[in-house]
Image (cartoon, rainbow, N blue to C red; front, side, top):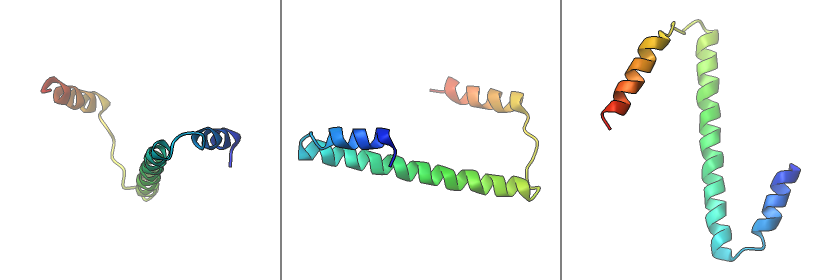
Length: 72
């Protein structure tokens, strides 16, 4: 375990059980999101390696993203 994580865990052990539980749930949720992101990235890399990628028109992409924000 890296030093920073060890230090964080040591600090968390000084908190109330309720706070420890909340932090633990948030940490596990964050780890799961990272795990899912890694799976999606690996899937995308495999797709690109297999020649399944397509060129992206970045200007069109940004226009579409900005249109979505204008509606909010």
